[in-house]
Structure formats: C-alpha cells, structure tokens
Image 1 (cartoon, rainbow, N blue to C red):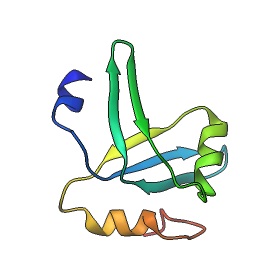
Image 2: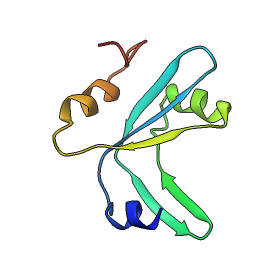
Image 3: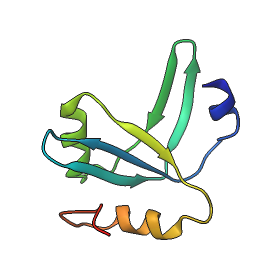
Length: 87
C-alpha cells in the first residue's frame, strides 16, 4: 500500500463495484491517502451521484488509478449512462 500510494499524490481514478447484478463505476478526481496504518483512502463522489450509493450499499469497491493515456476511460465513466462498461 505504501508503494502504490507513495507514487500517487493526486490524479483521476474510476471507483468500481457491483450492486449484486451488474458492475458499476464512476470517475472521481479527488482520491487521496489518509493513513497507511490502518490503511485508509479518501475520495469524494459528487453529491448528485446515483452510482456511489449503490456501490456503498454493497460494502465493497475498487479504486482504479488511471494513467495519463486513459482519457477515454475517464470520459466513459464520467458520463451518465446505464451501462458505463459497454464496449
């Protein structure tokens, strides 16, 4: 965890999870390390996000840190769509 977060001071990420039936995800630009012991990471979803409450309710999520070459992934998960994983 120290190695990963030590190389990521800020950037764009896609937060993903499942609601039991389908994959869910959204683009998030505010991800930061809070603590290494215990390991805590903070991120701030939009107040209007309809995806985050579904991921939060599942109790599990994944933070996918994007590379500077993944602008299309960033844009795909930033849009409002039923299936952001299509394609």
